Length: 411
Image (cartoon, rainbow, N blue to C red; front, side):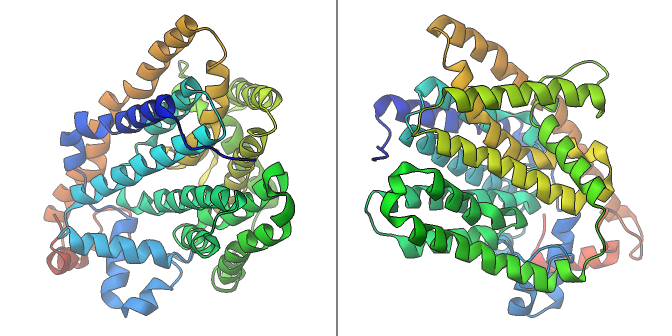
C-alpha cells in the first residue's frame, strides 16, 4: 500500500488553511505584543539561572515531567531573541503553522478530500480556544511534542513504503517524549497504527518495537524520578476528570450556549454529539483511513487519562481550560472534516461560512483580555510591588524576577 504525496488541489488547500491559521496573530498582533513572561516561564528562568545547564535540563520540572529537549530549545530561544517575549510568541505560531501543514499533508496521504482537509486544518488552526496554547511560551512544549510526532508519522509512512529512516523516526519519537509529558504516548500510538495498518504486513514486529522503545525509556524515567515520589491518586476523581475532558472538548467552547456550565447537561449535549461524529467517521472511513482515525481517538483518550491522573485535584471546571484544547482539536478535526465533506458543494460552502466565524470571531474579545491578564498586569505589578512580594502565580518574588530581567534582558 502506498501513501501518495499531496496533489496540486490538496497542496493549495493545505497551504491556504495553514497560512490562514496565522491570521489571529496578524490581526491581534497588538495584544500579543503586550504579553509577558508568566508563571512557569519564571520558574524555568529561575531554575536555569540557579543550576548547571546539564543538571537543570534533566531535573523534573516542578516535580511533574522530565522535558530536556523543550528546556534546551526554550532557553536557547530566550537567548537568541534577546529576551523578547513577542518573538517567543511568534515562535509558537511558527511551530503551529508547521503543525498545521504537516497535519494537512498527513491527511492528504490518506486520501482525505480537500474539503475534509480544509475543515480539519482550519478547525485546528484557527480556533480561538487555543488562546492559552498560542499565547504562553511555556506551551511550546506541547507544540514541539506534536511537531516531532507528526514528523515521525510521516517518516513511518516512508519506512512502511520501503524507504529508510528508522534512526530519524526513533529520534523524533524520543524528542517528542522529552519535550512534553503528552509526547510520551506518541510512540505507543504509532505502534498501534502499525498494528492496524495493512501496509505494515511484513515488518510489524520490528516497527512496533522501534516505536515502543522511546516512550518506554521516557516513561521509565518519569516513573523513577517523578511518579514514584508523587502523592497518592484518587482513581474515581481521575476517571471523572478524564471523562469530562474527553466528552466536553473541543465542542464546549466552539458551540456556545447561554449560561452553560460544566455539568450533566453539557456532558450529554457535547458528549453525545462528539461520540456520534466519531462513530460516523469510523463507519464511513475506508480501510486505509480507519487506522489513522482510530489512532486519533486513542490519542484523545490517552490525553484524557493523563490529564485525569495529573489534574483531577484542580476541579472539573478546569477540564475545559483553554490550555487543554490543542490536542482535542487536533484529534477531532478530521472526524468532523469527513462529515462536512459529504454534502454537495453549496452545502459545504454554507457550513464553512458559518463555522469559520465561530472559530475566529471570539479572538476579538479574548485576545485583549488575555493581553491584560498575561501581559499588562504582570508588567505593572512587577514594576510596583516590593522585592519580597509575589507579582504572579509563580514562586518567584518580584525582586528575583527583576534580577532575571537584567540577566536575560527580558522585555
